[in-house]
Length: 238
Ligand code: URA
Image 1 (spheres, rainbow, N blue to C red):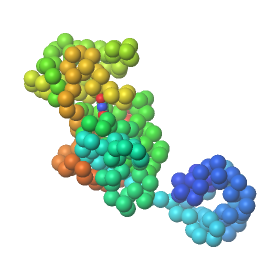
Image 2 (image 1 turned 45 degrees about the vertical axis):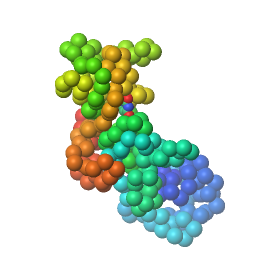
Image 3 (image 1 turned 180 degrees about the vertical axis):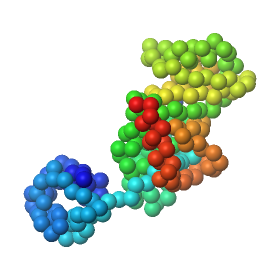
Image 4 (image 1 turned 90 degrees about the vertical axis):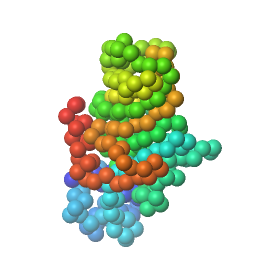
């Protein structure tokens, strides 16, 4: 069972606020009867909801994994730059998918987009502690002291405290970094605070999802099993 106003706003009929007035006009009917109260509970699988005579259908949930190339901003609109939405096929844009969290313009890699607002909220909530793994090329070479400082929780140049994170040096000028939060320019600022400025950054993993061989600039739909796995893995950490 779910609230009628939530069902209608998720289906794109109108915003929760607009619905208040709309419902009073009798434009929405449930099983043939005017339904003036947005708080009323309906069973979307069993009840027939109509708006101005036409059936209202629950939009299908879509979760996309995009391999974001550098040069695109994570935003639905931008006056100057190309946005990640330009890389998404029209049929998905029509289903109102939006980015979950963000990657900087110059960062590449795994970016999720979805039309399920609650799932998006769960995935970006720092309380969920979803692990995000990055591959970085940088100046200098990371040392054991850098790894220990990441593990202890870094204090950035402006005083921002970071949660403990994993820094794995891969060789001169190359490291893997795993964080569980998403502060502004987080990885670049963490690395800069250790004198290791980043020159290339790519996100390879988010929770149980890996970028794998998805080519840059392309996206694919996640299966329900993959969505359930990200959700369950993160729920276990709450
Ligand atoms: N950290 C950064 O600095 N940039 C990103 O895009 C993601 C994480």
